[in-house]
Length: 234
Image (cartoon, rainbow, N blue to C red; front, side):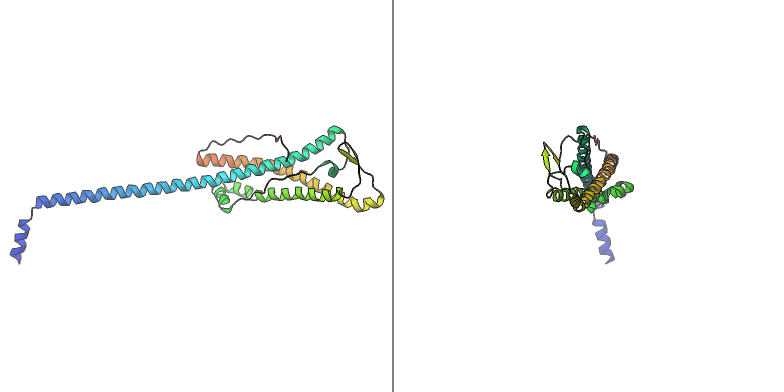
């Protein structure tokens, strides 16, 4: 048995065997390096895709916030124009008689949880301030719609003499006891609308700028928003 092993040992071409072993080692090494590079590239691509997804979420919030800021500014301008026109024409009437309800309103806006999560990753303080602004926007639209409905209900029962675009009406004491509270409620509603649109329009624009800056920093973007006074009515 020992003689057989010895004979087998000396019969092997060790030079050729070494070449085969060396070739196999090189092949395995190259295969390992290629596989490692493939995995590294897959990880880089996955990270790039994840970054693109995050950027898309951030830009979605920016688009929605632009709608919110624009809508609130338009609501504010509708009130400002009504009072400015009354002052320019010398009309002295209670607010509910001056502010004409808007005919149409834009759709409501809703932030998705994953969108807000992205903002939280960018800037936690911005997330805290911006997070509830879709509800603020939507509630404000509800208030303006309520004003339109309540004012329509009031004017539908009023008798008025029209002079051009102005209506004049006189009320008895009994009528005022019935209509006075409704008029007072409308005036109070307008006071709230003026206050909310003034404050919310300013804050919405500030948040929009902060969001723009955060996205520019995080994703090397060159977003540049410019505030313009709305020129059309809703």
